[in-house]
Length: 505
Image (cartoon, rainbow, N blue to C red; front, side, top):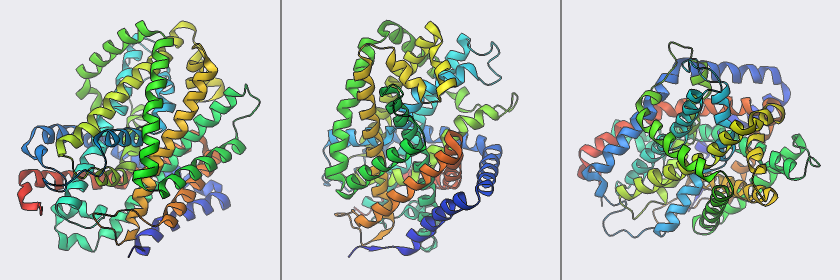
């Protein structure tokens, strides 16, 4: 019988509740707390985050070409939980989410006009443009997918092949031993739940800002983007992903993912055909080559000689954000990977989403840069109307802008609902007992509680602190997970050296 693990559910939920109360009752103290914690984390650990991210990539490459890549999750005779193409669509849609849809057009503008000091030719230069694309590829393609992929493989192997409990703590068993880690499993799950709450609140905030900005743009300013529209957008998104999560993986998530995959390709094809196709093709090829040539240099760039502010604001923030999502996303991705080999998991969780993200960046970042070079409109719109205005300025430059913007808003809404759906599902599973290999669905009430809590945190951060507050609360979530990631790597290295020793199938 499934029951709530109160020792796992209550601590992070109560802590998030304290954040809400503190925000409402003592705003200044709340802001000082968030600022102090975030600044301290980025000041002292940005270099460590960069190393963890790079090591994730190297371990995934080694895993793919090693003999363990042939191991099937659940055993050689295990049947897949979902068909392969459904598996691909679910992974693609749950990983991509709303983040890249906000930042694909806006972020390059920041890097071009506010570059780090190592860009000696200054803002707006071709060097700054090349740096912007390098950074986009670094932060949104193979590296983050490896940060997700490595723990997902580890969890899938431990749960299905080693028959360990459905807990993030199980991922530390190869490192510390089952006896030592057993009593700490609830504590580890609590830390990861808090981290994901922070990461999801940050991501939801980005989605709400972009959706609200799109509604304002679509209505020609008749409906203003502000606290009221933010509240309505948050409410709609939360209700949709809670309802979807309540239907289970094989209904809500799968159907949303299949729909969104079609919408992604439709929107991308629309931008390619109606946009500056020749420029995008040439610029994309050149940018990809530049990124591959400088991969290790940009991966390990910490700004030690020029000042760390840029690194802390961008790669440092993103590594914190990916790490905040990492444990719970790993549980969900590992859970749906039953029946597939580790090599198939890497192709599906790392390679396909990374290639798709690269294509998306070429289309949308490339279009934004093209428009900026032509008339300077994108950065000007961001300056006057906010970060989210960059995307709609690009879409407005295309023919049939109203149709394109409407399609974009539908894709955006569905993207976040799908991603939040999967993570709410995994969060609720962590807070439940009685889950087994055949049935990993948790009680609906837990999905409802987590959905409402995350929505409340998101709305309060938007109203009180805007996009900067969203980035700072994400840093709080990623910090403890960085240490877990290090131990996950050690666990996986030990398994790779002798998989037969750990497997029970």
